[in-house]
Amino acid sequence: MALEWISRTCFDVVHRTNLVYNACWEDPRVDRVALDLSADDDVLVITSAGCNALDYALAGAGHVHAVDMNPRQNALLELKLAGIRRLDFEHFFSLFGLGRLKDWDGVYASQLRRELSPSAQNYWDRRGAAFFSGQSRRNSFYFHGSCGLIAYLASGYIRRSRRLRNVVQDLFAAKTVDEQRDIYVSQNVRETLFRPLLKWLLRRNATFALLGVPPSQRRQLDTGYAGGIAQFIIDRVETVFSRLPLYDNYFWRVYMTGHYSPNCCPEYLRYENFQKLRRELADRVAVHTDTLLGFLRRYPGQISRFVLLDHMDWLYANSPGLLTQEWQAIIDRAAPEARAIWRSAGLNVDFVDPLEVQTSRGRSAVGDLLTYNRDLAQTLHTRDRVQTYGSFHVASIAPA
Picture 1 (spheres, one colour):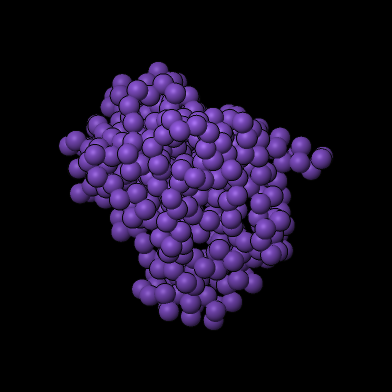
Picture 2 (spheres, rainbow, N blue to C red):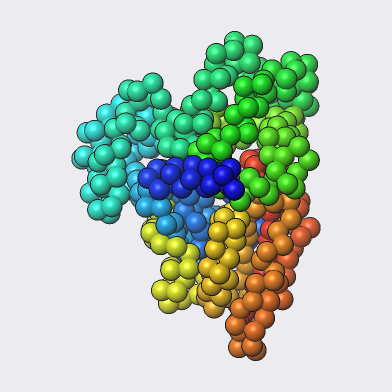
């Protein structure tokens, strides 16, 4: 009980006052296939860092509702939207590609601030210079925020070892998976990278709180994966480095180097896509500071695509009644042929299907209203460039 209290307290303290995610760690390339977006789709997505909300607009969604109860996450998406509308591409890429802008103070005051909501203005007035000016030891935005601190420590861990630094550079420069695998094996990367200190950190509550991993998710992997969560991470890193292409894996690149490259970055940071967003597509993205339940209860229309990330792991462990209410709202607002995708730390998710909701035909288990595409989900899960989740789920929703 004491360990559980410590875990929960660490997580709550980190999330109460911090920007947790400075980049999305859900692969939108996978999502695009699973969602099959069109101009007729209204998408609901948890904001996180906003990268994927922009990606869904680029993929052709008619409207994207980015919803997050953490106003700091929404402030980040607002800043990206402001940059798309007001900055030239060079300044925009410097800000969100390199994670630093030399004249942050002047650019923010003259071009970005007026595009923001009062809440976002208040946040970036206080934190913007520290995050984006590049003048601190953590000289990139991607080394700030809760996850950014872990990235900064990981990057420093790699920089301090010349051998490890050179090996990581070689891995990202490799042209094929076979070349990556040869480097990984011949240079003994597993033993060099996962030294006792790092393994010790991978067992600490505070480490996972900074990464945005709630205690419930850690328990799922500690009990469901052979060797626990530390072994899960070791195996996932090995998969990323030796079994999947790294040349376009911008998720791991930015957290190991503190920046993207022009050829290895989210789609919104590519010049042609920046122009598309600037011309019209950014206007398809709306930002809402709310819970999913609160948003769905107030939204007057229908949603055809639900991107639920992994928040149900936390919600079920801490407030299963609210999870039931959320699914009731999802069923109530689901358009014909609606679809939902979600991720989980668990290798299997057994808590969604038994939830009971009300439909026009009476009470029904959520599982009876879902048609899972398990083969597609498993295929996409193996291709996911991030590899930090235990499972991925794709389901069509029957109308209420």
